[in-house]
Length: 336
Image 1: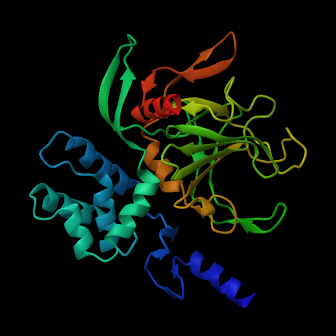
Image 2: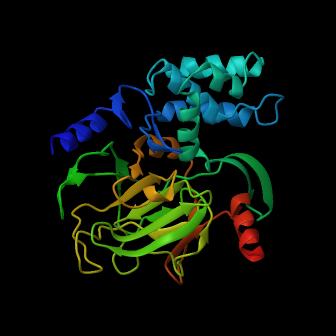
Image 3: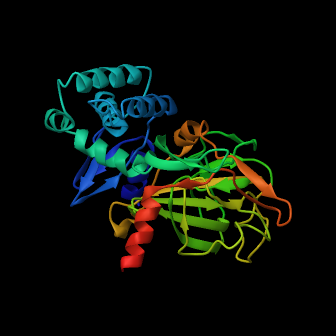
């Protein structure tokens, strides 16, 4: 019991655990995969690194935003503060002038590879090539941020950083998600392209959706969806979704063994993000859930525009988008 309490305190204080001991500010790796990630990247750092990546895409040296963030993490001991922007500018200059490479950073800094792999697991599907329709419906090829806020454009919400606070329905535990408060029926958006891995009732999350990224590293958990009509029409397990698709509607279902019950006091979306480096981490005592608050702030500047079909009362994205990872998954499924 004492060991269990000590472990919880260590995790809460940001100390990373190793097999055989604990060291402050040092990442967790054990065996062949990462066992813990403390994602502390600020929304400001995310915006800065993403902009440098996009602006340099067709340049001689393309600045990968994950490399920039991993370097800033190394320099800041895993924490992001007022110095982080300077770290990002510093490494962007070194990379652009070809004074160092990503491989050189891995050789020079002991924990660079850990941060790169950890941040790749979090952010790997958010920036890249895609096609999106203009007002005429014509698809235009682009490179940039292709992930979206889970709240549709034009719908207000409020949030604060509530990751890790106490919950006691069923049993005492930490809140491993990010709550975004809004109005019943607010369209909920797929943050990233992937496939529907879970759909249905959960006694804690109510009507919920679980979407797995195609690289299987990320599991997005959308919970407390609307009573009676929680999901986008026709959505089912196994479906492929594209980032920006409407997948469901905000509500306050949950905290009940009986289905379709509104036992949550406040209307909100519970937005969870789980990392999976090994399938043994998907369910059980080794799950890795990260704080989505800073990501929500970063993605708030990229919200999907939607429109309502008055005949069905369903919402859908206004501009069609094609994501290469979805097309690749469809092709692979066809070949198999």
